[in-house]
Image (cartoon, rainbow, N blue to C red; front, side, top):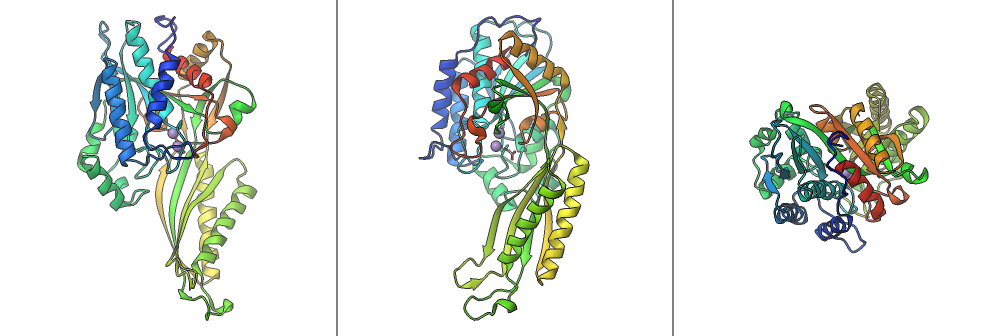
Length: 411
Ligand code: GLV
Ligand code: MN
Ligand code: MN
Protein backbone atom coordinates (compact mmCIF):
# COMPACT_ATOMS: atom_id res chain seq x y z
CA UNK A 1 0.00 0.00 0.00
CA UNK A 2 2.85 2.33 0.59
CA UNK A 3 3.40 1.93 -3.11
CA UNK A 4 5.16 -0.46 -5.39
CA UNK A 5 7.79 2.24 -6.01
CA UNK A 6 8.98 2.00 -2.40
CA UNK A 7 9.81 -1.67 -2.56
CA UNK A 8 10.78 -2.46 1.01
CA UNK A 9 8.38 -5.33 1.35
CA UNK A 10 9.87 -8.52 -0.02
CA UNK A 11 9.40 -10.13 3.37
CA UNK A 12 5.86 -10.60 4.59
CA UNK A 13 4.72 -10.01 8.12
CA UNK A 14 4.90 -12.72 10.74
CA UNK A 15 1.47 -14.38 10.51
CA UNK A 16 2.09 -16.78 13.38
CA UNK A 17 3.24 -14.01 15.75
CA UNK A 18 0.25 -11.95 14.63
CA UNK A 19 -2.02 -14.87 15.48
CA UNK A 20 -0.53 -15.15 18.97
CA UNK A 21 -1.19 -11.47 19.53
CA UNK A 22 -4.70 -11.78 18.14
CA UNK A 23 -5.40 -14.66 20.54
CA UNK A 24 -3.91 -12.73 23.48
CA UNK A 25 -6.17 -9.80 22.72
CA UNK A 26 -9.24 -12.03 22.41
CA UNK A 27 -8.83 -13.00 26.07
CA UNK A 28 -9.96 -9.53 27.15
CA UNK A 29 -13.72 -9.76 27.54
CA UNK A 30 -13.75 -13.36 26.28
CA UNK A 31 -17.20 -14.95 26.52
CA UNK A 32 -17.81 -18.69 27.05
CA UNK A 33 -19.25 -19.01 23.53
CA UNK A 34 -15.95 -17.99 21.93
CA UNK A 35 -16.70 -14.31 21.34
CA UNK A 36 -15.77 -11.12 23.16
CA UNK A 37 -17.79 -8.49 24.97
CA UNK A 38 -15.85 -5.23 25.11
CA UNK A 39 -18.31 -2.35 25.13
CA UNK A 40 -16.57 1.01 25.13
CA UNK A 41 -14.74 1.79 28.39
CA UNK A 42 -15.76 -1.48 30.04
CA UNK A 43 -12.98 -3.05 32.14
CA UNK A 44 -12.31 -5.52 29.31
CA UNK A 45 -12.05 -2.73 26.72
CA UNK A 46 -9.70 -0.64 28.85
CA UNK A 47 -7.57 -3.72 29.55
CA UNK A 48 -7.40 -4.61 25.82
CA UNK A 49 -6.25 -1.08 25.01
CA UNK A 50 -3.60 -1.23 27.74
CA UNK A 51 -2.38 -4.54 26.30
CA UNK A 52 -2.10 -2.96 22.86
CA UNK A 53 0.16 -0.16 24.12
CA UNK A 54 2.29 -2.57 26.15
CA UNK A 55 2.68 -4.91 23.16
CA UNK A 56 3.70 -2.01 20.94
CA UNK A 57 6.26 -0.82 23.48
CA UNK A 58 7.63 -4.34 23.85
CA UNK A 59 8.08 -4.32 20.08
CA UNK A 60 10.14 -1.13 20.30
CA UNK A 61 7.45 1.23 18.99
CA UNK A 62 6.58 4.62 20.42
CA UNK A 63 3.04 4.94 21.84
CA UNK A 64 0.58 7.73 22.31
CA UNK A 65 -2.97 8.30 23.62
CA UNK A 66 -4.84 11.40 22.42
CA UNK A 67 -7.52 13.45 24.17
CA UNK A 68 -10.29 11.34 22.58
CA UNK A 69 -8.68 8.21 24.02
CA UNK A 70 -7.44 6.93 20.64
CA UNK A 71 -4.50 4.61 21.35
CA UNK A 72 -1.58 4.62 18.92
CA UNK A 73 1.70 2.88 18.18
CA UNK A 74 4.08 4.92 16.05
CA UNK A 75 7.01 4.12 13.77
CA UNK A 76 8.70 7.29 12.66
CA UNK A 77 10.27 7.81 9.26
CA UNK A 78 13.96 8.25 10.00
CA UNK A 79 15.21 9.83 6.83
CA UNK A 80 12.18 11.34 5.15
CA UNK A 81 11.52 15.07 5.34
CA UNK A 82 7.79 14.35 4.84
CA UNK A 83 6.18 15.01 8.23
CA UNK A 84 2.93 13.33 7.29
CA UNK A 85 1.49 10.28 9.02
CA UNK A 86 -0.13 7.27 7.36
CA UNK A 87 -2.73 5.92 9.77
CA UNK A 88 -3.50 2.19 9.83
CA UNK A 89 -6.09 0.92 12.24
CA UNK A 90 -9.54 -0.02 13.43
CA UNK A 91 -11.12 -0.44 16.90
CA UNK A 92 -10.83 -2.64 19.98
CA UNK A 93 -14.34 -2.04 21.32
CA UNK A 94 -17.06 -4.56 20.43
CA UNK A 95 -20.81 -4.83 20.43
CA UNK A 96 -22.17 -6.58 23.53
CA UNK A 97 -21.60 -10.31 23.02
CA UNK A 98 -19.72 -9.72 19.78
CA UNK A 99 -17.07 -11.63 17.87
CA UNK A 100 -13.29 -11.60 18.16
CA UNK A 101 -12.48 -10.26 14.70
CA UNK A 102 -14.58 -7.11 14.23
CA UNK A 103 -12.12 -4.25 14.75
CA UNK A 104 -9.50 -6.28 16.62
CA UNK A 105 -8.11 -7.86 13.45
CA UNK A 106 -7.47 -4.42 11.94
CA UNK A 107 -5.68 -3.17 15.05
CA UNK A 108 -3.47 -6.26 15.39
CA UNK A 109 -2.70 -6.20 11.66
CA UNK A 110 -1.79 -2.50 11.83
CA UNK A 111 0.53 -3.21 14.74
CA UNK A 112 2.18 -6.03 12.80
CA UNK A 113 2.63 -3.89 9.72
CA UNK A 114 4.64 -1.49 11.89
CA UNK A 115 6.58 -4.32 13.52
CA UNK A 116 7.38 -5.83 10.11
CA UNK A 117 8.55 -2.47 8.75
CA UNK A 118 10.66 -1.91 11.84
CA UNK A 119 12.09 -5.42 11.65
CA UNK A 120 12.99 -4.92 8.00
CA UNK A 121 14.63 -1.56 8.80
CA UNK A 122 12.32 -0.05 6.20
CA UNK A 123 13.18 3.40 4.96
CA UNK A 124 9.70 4.84 5.34
CA UNK A 125 8.50 7.75 3.20
CA UNK A 126 6.42 8.97 6.15
CA UNK A 127 5.55 8.03 9.70
CA UNK A 128 3.32 4.99 10.22
CA UNK A 129 0.78 4.98 13.03
CA UNK A 130 -1.29 1.97 14.13
CA UNK A 131 -4.39 3.37 15.80
CA UNK A 132 -7.17 1.90 17.92
CA UNK A 133 -10.10 4.31 17.63
CA UNK A 134 -12.41 4.98 20.57
CA UNK A 135 -16.03 3.74 20.48
CA UNK A 136 -16.44 2.74 16.87
CA UNK A 137 -19.40 0.49 17.63
CA UNK A 138 -21.46 3.19 19.29
CA UNK A 139 -21.95 1.82 22.78
CA UNK A 140 -21.74 5.50 23.66
CA UNK A 141 -21.67 7.64 20.50
CA UNK A 142 -20.33 5.74 17.45
CA UNK A 143 -17.14 6.65 15.52
CA UNK A 144 -16.29 8.84 18.50
CA UNK A 145 -12.51 8.66 18.21
CA UNK A 146 -12.31 8.74 14.43
CA UNK A 147 -14.68 11.69 14.17
CA UNK A 148 -12.73 13.53 16.87
CA UNK A 149 -9.50 12.94 14.94
CA UNK A 150 -11.12 14.03 11.68
CA UNK A 151 -12.46 17.16 13.38
CA UNK A 152 -16.09 16.38 12.55
CA UNK A 153 -17.27 15.69 16.09
CA UNK A 154 -19.50 18.47 17.43
CA UNK A 155 -20.54 19.32 21.01
CA UNK A 156 -24.22 19.17 19.97
CA UNK A 157 -23.78 15.61 18.78
CA UNK A 158 -22.73 14.61 22.29
CA UNK A 159 -25.89 15.93 23.91
CA UNK A 160 -28.14 13.01 22.98
CA UNK A 161 -25.81 10.17 21.99
CA UNK A 162 -26.81 6.61 21.08
CA UNK A 163 -26.05 5.15 24.50
CA UNK A 164 -27.63 8.05 26.39
CA UNK A 165 -26.06 11.11 27.90
CA UNK A 166 -25.54 9.59 31.34
CA UNK A 167 -23.60 6.62 29.98
CA UNK A 168 -21.35 8.95 27.97
CA UNK A 169 -20.54 11.14 30.97
CA UNK A 170 -19.88 8.11 33.18
CA UNK A 171 -17.82 6.37 30.47
CA UNK A 172 -15.58 9.36 29.84
CA UNK A 173 -14.94 9.62 33.54
CA UNK A 174 -14.03 5.93 33.80
CA UNK A 175 -11.55 6.35 30.96
CA UNK A 176 -10.10 9.55 32.45
CA UNK A 177 -11.21 11.65 29.45
CA UNK A 178 -12.70 15.14 29.47
CA UNK A 179 -15.61 15.92 27.20
CA UNK A 180 -14.44 19.42 26.33
CA UNK A 181 -11.04 18.07 25.32
CA UNK A 182 -12.32 15.37 22.94
CA UNK A 183 -12.21 17.94 20.14
CA UNK A 184 -8.49 18.59 20.71
CA UNK A 185 -7.80 15.18 19.16
CA UNK A 186 -8.38 16.77 15.75
CA UNK A 187 -5.37 16.35 13.42
CA UNK A 188 -4.41 18.82 10.75
CA UNK A 189 -5.43 17.01 7.51
CA UNK A 190 -2.27 18.41 5.91
CA UNK A 191 -0.28 16.19 8.25
CA UNK A 192 -2.13 13.03 7.24
CA UNK A 193 -0.93 10.93 4.31
CA UNK A 194 -4.03 8.73 4.41
CA UNK A 195 -5.89 6.06 6.32
CA UNK A 196 -6.05 2.35 5.65
CA UNK A 197 -8.17 -0.17 7.55
CA UNK A 198 -8.23 -3.95 7.37
CA UNK A 199 -11.55 -5.45 8.46
CA UNK A 200 -13.51 -8.64 8.13
CA UNK A 201 -16.29 -8.39 5.54
CA UNK A 202 -19.03 -9.25 8.06
CA UNK A 203 -21.14 -10.53 5.16
CA UNK A 204 -21.10 -13.56 2.84
CA UNK A 205 -20.05 -12.17 -0.54
CA UNK A 206 -16.30 -12.85 -0.61
CA UNK A 207 -16.74 -16.36 0.75
CA UNK A 208 -19.53 -17.17 -1.70
CA UNK A 209 -17.41 -16.07 -4.64
CA UNK A 210 -14.21 -17.56 -3.21
CA UNK A 211 -12.43 -14.20 -3.39
CA UNK A 212 -9.55 -13.49 -1.00
CA UNK A 213 -9.51 -9.69 -0.78
CA UNK A 214 -12.40 -7.22 -0.85
CA UNK A 215 -11.65 -3.75 -2.18
CA UNK A 216 -14.21 -1.51 -0.53
CA UNK A 217 -15.49 1.23 -2.79
CA UNK A 218 -17.97 2.94 -0.45
CA UNK A 219 -19.47 2.71 3.01
CA UNK A 220 -23.19 2.69 3.58
CA UNK A 221 -24.99 5.70 5.12
CA UNK A 222 -27.31 5.21 8.05
CA UNK A 223 -29.81 7.06 10.19
CA UNK A 224 -31.05 6.10 13.60
CA UNK A 225 -33.98 7.20 15.70
CA UNK A 226 -35.22 6.70 19.22
CA UNK A 227 -39.01 6.20 19.25
CA UNK A 228 -41.11 6.38 22.37
CA UNK A 229 -44.65 5.00 22.14
CA UNK A 230 -46.96 6.04 24.98
CA UNK A 231 -50.08 4.00 25.58
CA UNK A 232 -52.10 3.41 28.72
CA UNK A 233 -50.85 1.06 31.38
CA UNK A 234 -53.48 -1.33 32.70
CA UNK A 235 -54.29 -4.49 34.62
CA UNK A 236 -53.58 -7.51 32.41
CA UNK A 237 -56.50 -9.45 33.86
CA UNK A 238 -59.22 -6.86 33.95
CA UNK A 239 -58.62 -4.54 30.99
CA UNK A 240 -60.75 -5.83 28.08
CA UNK A 241 -58.89 -6.37 24.82
CA UNK A 242 -60.95 -3.70 23.06
CA UNK A 243 -60.22 -1.14 25.76
CA UNK A 244 -56.44 -1.31 25.60
CA UNK A 245 -53.85 1.16 24.34
CA UNK A 246 -50.99 -1.31 24.57
CA UNK A 247 -47.58 0.20 23.86
CA UNK A 248 -46.02 -3.23 23.16
CA UNK A 249 -48.59 -3.96 20.47
CA UNK A 250 -47.84 -0.56 18.93
CA UNK A 251 -44.11 -1.43 18.95
CA UNK A 252 -44.85 -4.73 17.20
CA UNK A 253 -46.81 -2.89 14.51
CA UNK A 254 -43.93 -0.45 14.06
CA UNK A 255 -41.46 -3.30 13.59
CA UNK A 256 -43.61 -5.02 10.99
CA UNK A 257 -44.54 -1.74 9.26
CA UNK A 258 -40.90 -0.73 8.86
CA UNK A 259 -40.02 -4.14 7.49
CA UNK A 260 -42.87 -4.06 4.99
CA UNK A 261 -41.84 -0.63 3.64
CA UNK A 262 -38.20 -1.58 3.20
CA UNK A 263 -38.88 -4.93 1.55
CA UNK A 264 -41.51 -3.48 -0.78
CA UNK A 265 -40.14 -0.03 -1.66
CA UNK A 266 -36.40 -0.10 -0.90
CA UNK A 267 -35.20 -3.62 -1.68
CA UNK A 268 -31.51 -2.69 -1.75
CA UNK A 269 -31.70 -1.17 1.76
CA UNK A 270 -31.91 -2.56 5.27
CA UNK A 271 -33.76 -1.44 8.40
CA UNK A 272 -33.51 -2.85 11.89
CA UNK A 273 -35.29 -2.45 15.19
CA UNK A 274 -32.41 -3.59 17.37
CA UNK A 275 -33.88 -2.85 20.77
CA UNK A 276 -37.36 -2.69 22.28
CA UNK A 277 -38.06 -2.04 25.96
CA UNK A 278 -41.50 -1.99 27.41
CA UNK A 279 -42.48 -0.49 30.75
CA UNK A 280 -43.07 -1.48 33.39
CA UNK A 281 -42.22 -4.96 32.03
CA UNK A 282 -44.28 -7.53 33.93
CA UNK A 283 -46.50 -10.50 33.03
CA UNK A 284 -49.55 -8.90 34.51
CA UNK A 285 -49.34 -5.29 33.36
CA UNK A 286 -50.44 -3.98 29.95
CA UNK A 287 -47.34 -1.97 28.90
CA UNK A 288 -47.80 1.78 29.07
CA UNK A 289 -44.57 2.73 27.31
CA UNK A 290 -42.40 1.14 24.61
CA UNK A 291 -38.98 2.46 23.63
CA UNK A 292 -37.81 1.39 20.19
CA UNK A 293 -34.34 1.76 18.61
CA UNK A 294 -34.65 2.05 14.83
CA UNK A 295 -31.94 2.35 12.22
CA UNK A 296 -31.87 2.04 8.44
CA UNK A 297 -29.05 2.05 5.90
CA UNK A 298 -28.55 2.76 2.22
CA UNK A 299 -25.69 3.59 -0.15
CA UNK A 300 -27.70 6.58 -1.37
CA UNK A 301 -28.51 9.77 0.55
CA UNK A 302 -31.69 10.45 -1.47
CA UNK A 303 -32.93 6.99 -0.63
CA UNK A 304 -32.25 7.62 3.07
CA UNK A 305 -34.39 10.78 2.81
CA UNK A 306 -37.19 8.82 1.16
CA UNK A 307 -37.04 6.01 3.74
CA UNK A 308 -37.06 8.51 6.55
CA UNK A 309 -40.18 10.28 5.37
CA UNK A 310 -42.09 7.10 4.51
CA UNK A 311 -41.15 5.19 7.66
CA UNK A 312 -41.73 8.05 10.09
CA UNK A 313 -45.10 8.85 8.49
CA UNK A 314 -46.12 5.21 8.84
CA UNK A 315 -45.10 5.12 12.52
CA UNK A 316 -47.11 8.27 13.25
CA UNK A 317 -50.15 6.88 11.42
CA UNK A 318 -49.96 3.50 13.20
CA UNK A 319 -49.74 5.19 16.58
CA UNK A 320 -52.58 7.56 15.86
CA UNK A 321 -54.88 4.74 14.75
CA UNK A 322 -54.32 2.97 18.09
CA UNK A 323 -54.59 6.07 20.30
CA UNK A 324 -50.90 5.88 21.17
CA UNK A 325 -48.69 8.94 21.68
CA UNK A 326 -45.41 8.98 19.78
CA UNK A 327 -42.14 10.88 20.16
CA UNK A 328 -39.42 10.44 17.54
CA UNK A 329 -35.88 11.74 18.14
CA UNK A 330 -33.05 11.51 15.61
CA UNK A 331 -29.91 9.95 17.07
CA UNK A 332 -27.29 9.61 14.33
CA UNK A 333 -26.97 10.52 10.69
CA UNK A 334 -24.03 8.99 8.80
CA UNK A 335 -23.75 9.92 5.16
CA UNK A 336 -22.87 7.31 2.54
CA UNK A 337 -19.14 7.69 1.96
CA UNK A 338 -17.11 6.90 -1.13
CA UNK A 339 -13.56 5.66 -0.53
CA UNK A 340 -10.58 6.85 -2.56
CA UNK A 341 -10.38 5.19 -6.03
CA UNK A 342 -6.58 5.63 -5.99
CA UNK A 343 -6.53 3.42 -2.92
CA UNK A 344 -8.82 0.82 -4.56
CA UNK A 345 -6.18 0.59 -7.28
CA UNK A 346 -3.32 0.39 -4.79
CA UNK A 347 -5.05 -2.44 -2.90
CA UNK A 348 -5.66 -4.29 -6.16
CA UNK A 349 -2.02 -3.93 -7.22
CA UNK A 350 -0.79 -5.06 -3.81
CA UNK A 351 -3.10 -8.08 -3.90
CA UNK A 352 -2.04 -8.94 -7.46
CA UNK A 353 1.64 -8.80 -6.40
CA UNK A 354 0.81 -11.35 -3.72
CA UNK A 355 -1.18 -13.53 -6.13
CA UNK A 356 -4.48 -12.85 -4.34
CA UNK A 357 -7.89 -12.50 -5.97
CA UNK A 358 -9.90 -9.31 -5.43
CA UNK A 359 -13.42 -8.01 -5.79
CA UNK A 360 -14.74 -4.45 -5.47
CA UNK A 361 -17.71 -4.13 -3.17
CA UNK A 362 -19.47 -1.58 -0.96
CA UNK A 363 -19.63 -2.02 2.82
CA UNK A 364 -22.99 -2.43 4.54
CA UNK A 365 -21.35 -1.95 7.93
CA UNK A 366 -20.03 1.30 9.34
CA UNK A 367 -16.27 1.78 9.82
CA UNK A 368 -13.83 4.37 11.13
CA UNK A 369 -12.73 4.79 7.50
CA UNK A 370 -15.95 6.70 6.82
CA UNK A 371 -14.99 9.36 9.35
CA UNK A 372 -11.42 9.57 8.06
CA UNK A 373 -12.54 9.80 4.42
CA UNK A 374 -13.84 13.31 5.13
CA UNK A 375 -10.29 14.60 5.62
CA UNK A 376 -7.76 12.22 4.07
CA UNK A 377 -7.57 9.60 1.28
CA UNK A 378 -8.99 6.50 2.94
CA UNK A 379 -9.21 2.85 2.05
CA UNK A 380 -10.72 -0.31 3.45
CA UNK A 381 -9.58 -3.89 2.81
CA UNK A 382 -11.97 -6.76 3.51
CA UNK A 383 -11.14 -10.38 4.17
CA UNK A 384 -13.80 -13.13 4.02
CA UNK A 385 -16.06 -13.85 7.00
CA UNK A 386 -16.92 -17.51 7.44
CA UNK A 387 -20.65 -17.89 6.79
CA UNK A 388 -20.92 -14.09 6.70
CA UNK A 389 -21.46 -14.19 10.48
CA UNK A 390 -20.73 -10.99 12.43
CA UNK A 391 -21.76 -9.07 15.56
CA UNK A 392 -22.04 -12.56 16.98
CA UNK A 393 -19.65 -14.78 18.99
CA UNK A 394 -19.50 -17.15 16.01
CA UNK A 395 -17.75 -14.52 13.87
CA UNK A 396 -14.68 -16.04 12.25
CA UNK A 397 -12.16 -15.70 9.43
CA UNK A 398 -9.69 -18.33 8.24
CA UNK A 399 -6.33 -17.23 9.65
CA UNK A 400 -4.67 -17.46 6.26
CA UNK A 401 -7.21 -14.97 4.91
CA UNK A 402 -6.57 -12.62 7.82
CA UNK A 403 -2.82 -12.73 7.16
CA UNK A 404 -3.39 -12.15 3.43
CA UNK A 405 -5.31 -8.98 4.28
CA UNK A 406 -2.55 -7.79 6.61
CA UNK A 407 0.07 -8.48 3.94
CA UNK A 408 -1.90 -6.41 1.44
CA UNK A 409 -1.93 -3.53 3.97
CA UNK A 410 1.81 -4.06 4.52
CA UNK A 411 2.54 -3.52 0.82
C1 GLV B 1 -20.71 -1.16 13.04
O1 GLV B 1 -20.26 -2.29 13.09
C2 GLV B 1 -21.98 -0.93 12.39
O2 GLV B 1 -22.03 -1.06 11.17
O3 GLV B 1 -22.97 -0.68 13.08
MN1 MN C 1 -15.82 -2.93 13.05
MN1 MN D 1 -19.03 -3.85 14.36
